[in-house]
Image (cartoon, rainbow, N blue to C red):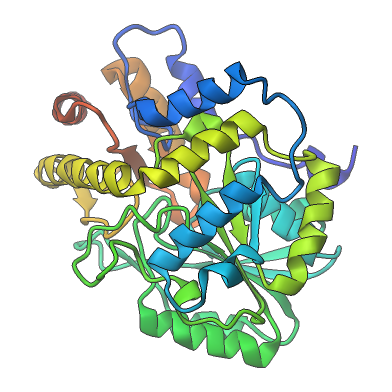
Length: 393
């Protein structure tokens, strides 16, 4: 076994979830998914595909019908190019995480330098490491512990990215903090990476889960709005979050057109292709995007606006309203060992949260609460359990 594989850290989120296995009555908010099932129209499209016998291999890059649908969807959100031109830049992947790994396989050699903005979903720093790259963390900073929000030191980031930096990894809107990039910050980063020759891998799977009022298209700022097709930019997307399709394992990459064919070859050697019936479901998802996603975002906003004021009222809790994503990321005073705290909350309060240290050492003492709940009343009950546990501790 390769040493880097042996040294990979197991998921601390899963470690906490294992504490809850077999325990009755635990309110589970640890995983990054809604407890709502995939909309019926999407499920029915997949069922129809199976019943029609579509159980064979597909094109490595995805069904042309799906790639055209993704191109049209991308053009709707980012009308800077023609729909046909987007088509040449789309690769369908077996989940967003598969797309991110494919990007690392396409770009990284052993020993390459990677800069990653953290705290972040741990896969984003593990994948470059698996390829043998040297990953440097550029931490976001929590504003004076009164605000609970996280911000980017742009000057420090630019200083960290040099001509020796092969890849910059970004996730905005960010899991777990809810931090987002502004359009101005994106332009500055893109211009700097053009000068240094650095690739950007931008994980934008939470693009549509955005609650700020500074958007005309219901999406967070994207590098796709400002980049040229030939820029060294790969943007990763997924059907998981915006279409309630986490278990379907389907995503896509937006690539420079010169890279699309190469990624198609990598898909052959990784998964061959995504299942056809799953892709049929995705086509239906995009056909109903104007119904599914806005309704989901409105519900998530309600969930956020239910949870955050309640958390802010708990003594010892510091938390800010996230602009994007589906998480409340909060600091719990006096509980710096957040992994131990999360395990105790499961055992002693029946409350399942993710430890902040799962996303980076700089997030020790923080906890992540996924507020994507079908019933906002579960969020209220969870805060009651947290407050009761703190008062009894």
